[in-house]
Image 1 (cartoon, helix red, strand yellow):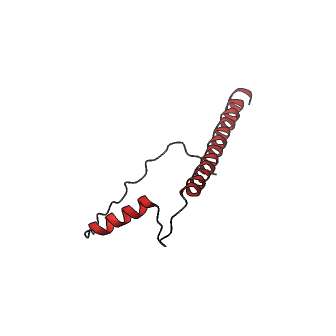
Image 2: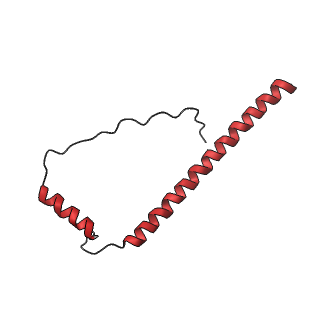
Image 3: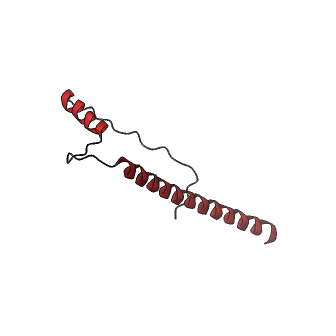
Length: 89
């Protein structure tokens, strides 16, 4: 488990603008997305997709919260040990 005192900023993202742009293809893909038609030509089930995304996000949020709580506990233990050694040793 790593202990981080300061959070460093993420590196700047690389953005590549493509040289070729097919407006009709973009319009076609946007329309398919609006209608909910997948790559295979069938409609996708948005309700199940949204539910699975929420479950996945909630699971990652819980794991992040557990890691944050654990690091706070470790910091408190370290501070308590330092106080003990300073005052009672």
